Length: 181
Image (cartoon, rainbow, N blue to C red; front, side, top):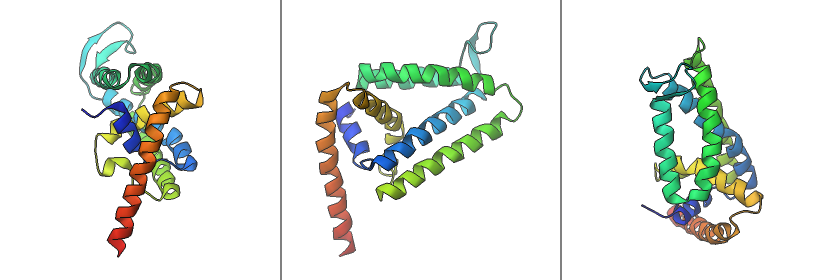
């Protein structure tokens, strides 16, 4: 498994434009919420209390698995992601009980991707997951890292990944220029 620094620098290499990052702060949470809503619509519950909001279903199993992956990468960032995912799990489970929840999930998913694609127009670089599907899981991890950096936390991590990302971006642009010749 690649380190947190390696994965974050790869992701950041195509997310250096501030406008792109801003669109991702809208798009990625929308996509995550819609995916959790879709997972909540799968009629499999492993454990439930009387309230349907407190259950172990496909969505919560997925959340646990992803959070374990994030913990293995970087425990402090995983804590922030857990604080984000818990309300996402709760609200998506509530909306899953509404008629038309599937259409809501699909609409929110599409809107989230529109924001993503607009951001990459600013960036003039393809999304990171095109070359590595694992980068789909790194998007939320990257955003949480950016939140930490904005709050003045994890300064050493930022100092490590930013130069690596810039070097990777230069290499990508060199490849692009060479391909045009």
